[in-house]
Image (cartoon, rainbow, N blue to C red):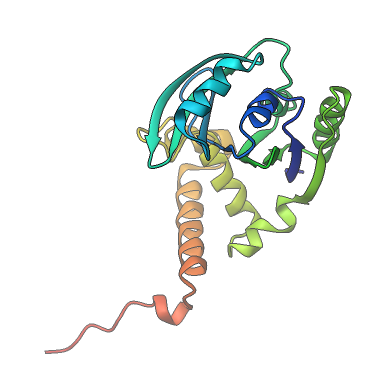
Length: 222
């Protein structure tokens, strides 16, 4: 059963450990769009010259390049040297997906989606074996929590997750509705109806409206 794990990981001993040692006020946030072979990380806190000096000196950093900026933070594409303890790659190798990742005060907080709880145990053991002891902050099964909070049925939730994973909502789309329906082993019409109902449930829950609120207004008579 698909699960979500929120995991705290000390930066010390990972690829970013030296950065936090050099500039303790550093904060990092993973860029959600992966556009290269490295990791897109938003870095902020110290000045940009201080950050780049730390990047230059860190032995675990192979290459880096600035690709964007936003006020007082900078987006870098960073590649670690081989054999670096990389929690992001470890997660991928355990068939997981990093949903979000941020770090401050020398500690990373990762939210990862895994195919089952055994994958969380494997990820924990891999980090621990590399002298990086994580802390499982929260672990829950998607079917038990997330879909009900959003007003979705389990099938609607699973369909939306599959659509996201296969790039249905990307621009341009990476998969057609027909291809997605074949992947889910349902008809094109059933997929369209399920998505429509899921959209309605999400909008209704997010806007906190009732069925009466969403009913079409009466057409005024002349």
